[in-house]
Image 1 (tube, rainbow, N blue to C red):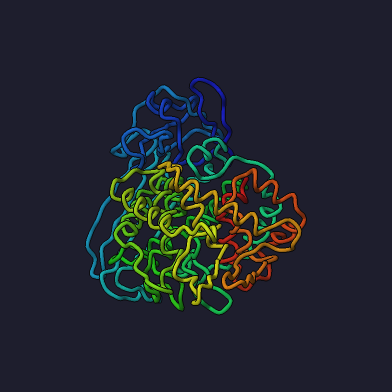
Image 2 (cartoon, one colour):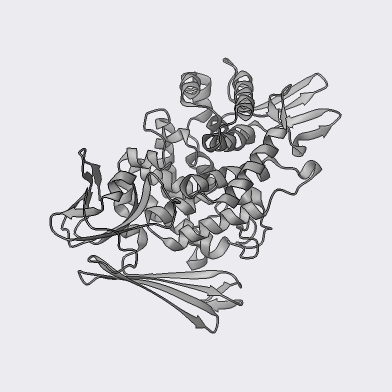
Length: 494
């Protein structure tokens, strides 16, 4: 399926539907949505606003449903108003809930005007039970899909015009900056092996058997590849990961996901291992209110659980990951409590700025005697992007100056002649020992700190290109984690 952008006052999209019903989420200009939407030519169209965006968003996320349009569907501004109740010319949406002995079942059914039917049935278990020969814990869920799968109906989303994806923050402006890395990721994705059974679908394991629980946000990584490469298979893979997180990895008590461990629910939920971007974006593109709601629940969970580690347990990731995720959520759906939590996190990180070291000094790096271990791949790959996302929403000259100082410190450390990229180093008492990485995903994550102009200069250097070449390795025993660390990076898709 393909989608093209048609320039003009009213024309918005042309979708190639292959004759099948289409249901997807699309970010559209607010001015166009205000005029209503219509289908030019045969078929039926209905639309509604998705449950994000606040009072005056731009772009506006809308669900579009089309049936009977033949091979192509042309959507224009100036037409029918929204169908918020799910009863329109393209389909009738029915939702029902009922109690079961083992839990509560919620089902959503779409009855299409061409006679097709789709259904998503999700059971949240109240107690441990065995279903289909697999053990489910209390709080887990099981989703069953009948008819057209959400990712199949939303397949045209992978061909949405780049300008729409950029306006909604899903991808950066296009370019050739990360082209060699993108080619490697395209080779690596088919080698990702999902865990077996309904419980394992959408998740992966490391070489030692550790269940990843989608660490670093595998759904986001797969989704960015899907949108950049136009891969419907990658979109379906991302959707399975998003559903897996919602069904199996979420702790209902805290609202946070369980982190990686020997099983899906064996770790202790913490704010440094919580990701919602992939879940949120998949929910938006597949027009899945349930996934959008889970992303909102994780945002509220992060807002309610600030970092608590002290001393060596004060971890940069416990501050920076939540800030990055909260800012990503706020860019789509404003929320006062979430915004206040993000502001507190940004201020907490900024208080740790150390002018002499040109970094943010956390307890985990204190080695005693004044020595400090700078984990630059975390500073550059997580802390700086999180603060930059915060500055995009709330400009602050002091925080901006500190971010720029840290960026310059990283650039100076990278240097011009030495091979590899410095992922961590030790400072203090006159000693300066660093580890420079070649062929490691941490090196690529480090580059997430830099704006396009700096990246272009860096990638012109042979030593930097060598450091990021052929990552992730196709024989990597931890391929899913390495793939995710690289493919989630915004710069890779420039």
